[in-house]
Image (tube, rainbow, N blue to C red; front, side):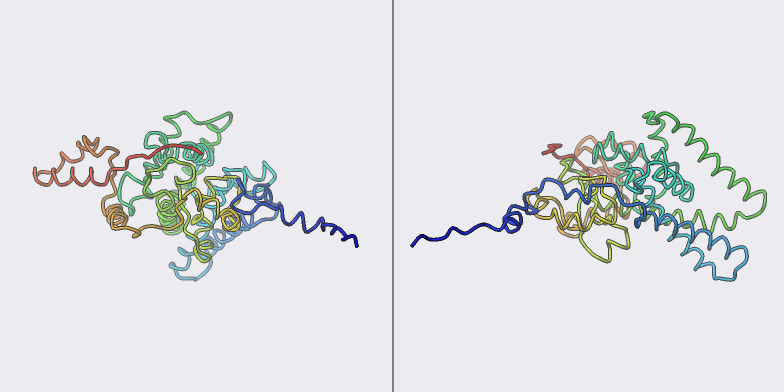
Length: 347
């Protein structure tokens, strides 16, 4: 009797040849495509402006406590921080003009300049953890964490020093800075500076600390690797994912910048096996080792980092101390906490 040959099921065969996450070199195209016209980033943009408007209305006509208004202003600015970040990567909206408008709108509320943020942030992506060319490296490593917010002004200096603007961006910077100055002068003239101090500058300072900590410091510490698979980290968590809007999956953003923030987590879960193979950091790692704990506490208190383990460029800083023994100890501490870059291999 002749044995009948089994005819393979084409659907079953197709299922068998689907690549696993360990075989993927990039996330599925659904994550890399532009977001839909109505997406969570649009919700953040509109929600941030709604909360800012409600804060202004309550200050003028309402009777809510100041603490509530400050909290609302903080949330409004915190939400717009993610909007400006995704807009600079053209990941906020599929329409280029709306994406630009969202970026400029978020920048105005934050007191930023969208061209400065965009050009400086793209420089960061091109030179992660390079002490000479990564502007965010200065933000993270040139002072204590509690003073990280004022160091964002270095972005403006970097923008002009490197002449990063293109086409109309210098004019856009002038318009946005002009609007900022006009609001402050109007506040002085019409006596609403208390609102600006309490519900704009104060929350903006708190948001600056938040952005500095979760966008710059925690994702890139210990600031030594320039390898694309290790120059940032992931520390998974569902609650943290929503609190800081995906920045606990920051390495995913560095590897594939076109992915919008709300898809970092699913993209990470698809690519986790590949990240495991590449040895990518997937823990917060603050107290992973004794050295990690010491360096984190050092960054909270002092945070000034040398880039040499000997003959530190920070020697002029040491000379301000009056006592020779103190100078020797501080110099030894700077050498001990120096950030020295590892291989920049890209594979």
